[in-house]
Image (cartoon, rainbow, N blue to C red; front, side, top):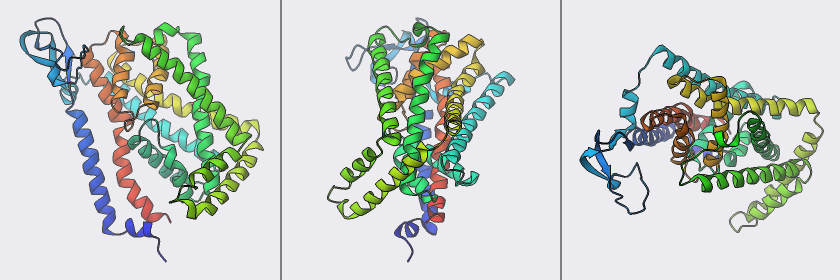
Length: 387
């Protein structure tokens, strides 16, 4: 008997799903390319002036009602596509933008290495590529507070990994990701001062600094909880699954949750028996993937600016703050907050708001939108192929 899922993903329905996905993805990209922003320019050189149309006392550079036409204004209306047209596309620019693409690919490559290590190479390189690309796709369309981990265990399961072990693997990847953050923040502050990394506008400095420290403590707490769950108290995960499956519409599958719980406990026991070399490999792949992720922004900045080694280290440190804001953002892929935090964190580099807007757009074009288009094409075929 063929499964309902295979019927849904079969035949011409695959192409309908792809067409719908591409239309939606294209609309998202089009909306971002045509997003307006009012850029602060010299007095009298702009076409608009700020009038605080919504009465909140804040210059909302993306709201048209906050501005009006003026012959002596100090704001210029700019769209993202206009910003791209104003770039001086030199060899230097292309070289570093190519570097940004390579770092993006490197991020996924090291994720593939990590997932193969955790699955004892039961996943082929091709299967690992499918898993990572679909995982990134899920992250791109999920709120930052949810991420792709919520569906990653199902992706692994459909690639032949028992559900309990897949759950344990996802928990370990989350633990490793959080551990990287906890370890790297103190290391960054050895080389650069706190004030040069956590810098914001005067109005938001105290609030966002508290957000940073509070977020770091939350990440540390989550890291400890995940460690205890997978290595010492795997029954916590089992109890959590059973709690979920007590819901009326899930209760009939409670026996499945019990089996998953047993698989998690078995996987936990197997992981505890691994030696230090194994875990150094896993954490090494995690560090390489995250550093590749961060170096994408460094490469984009180097495409437009002349930066020294310490400048790059400082920018690297700023990205830990940027990542924290994206992590707790309720919008898909951290959209909105990602661009805002990008501009706030890099505003002290002496870059014009116009150039910042261009770099933020390029960053998202390189590291965010490709996964949406790849995902909508890959997902239907993958569902059709995998039982």
